[in-house]
Length: 365
Image (cartoon, rainbow, N blue to C red; front, side, top):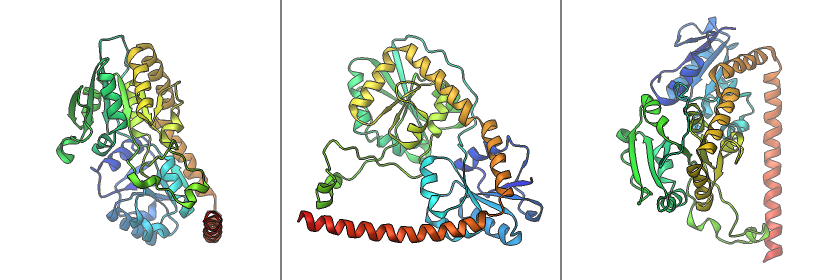
């Protein structure tokens, strides 16, 4: 099987991470924009110029199996007809793009950093670390920020934040007030040089919701809306990438309520899951006071990495997926049939829900 990967944006983060993993697969040729007739499969990133290249390749060789990697946003709509399948990096993305009824393969992408063995020891000062986008740092307020401030009154802790300061500016909203905070400029070297030194890793992922989201209505009364219900908001492109990096660095993780987090963290066994200030405070304190627990979580998460995230493991699964895709001649017929079924059922379900809500409103008014 002959496979080509093409993008005009080699230096953008998502491209770099996918290239890092896929380049371990010697069956894949990179950056050949002229010989689509030679290949069986062509993979394209989701940037507009890359999508135009996908369209060109498919028109040049209709038998070519084409993929959109890391699809995002409605701008991919005009190119769906030229793509045979998706490659994406999380259960969140898989659920969103299932509506197009294309075969999907989940490939977890992340910066290609070395494994850094870590031995956790009992120590006076505990360093709590974060890496990722500035927006998730800001969204730590108020729950996680409050937990850090509460623990800062009882323990000697620091918070290290690794993000792109040069591009995004300094993080200044929701910064814990009573503990030392270190801001570290993101770079590929910073993972090993700085982040490997932290003792506990935080993976916040939930986004704030509007204050009036709990506004009462006849529908909320019917569904027994309570003040202690959880309302969880997260981005569609959410993924386990930040957990993976901590796993490679030997750092135990506390993560926000998120499908990807719940998929790989078994609460209390290989990490912690939290949402409220109390939940974050409890989880952080358990890891602050016990270096044995920190070591146990780190060791178990490394096993998860070896089983699911290692590039060699993922590349083998990808080749198996592509071989099945090439052999299944009925995929296109199935897609047409399922698309029709999906559209008809969507119309039916929307109409059914609309009528049901009208009946509820009449009953409660």
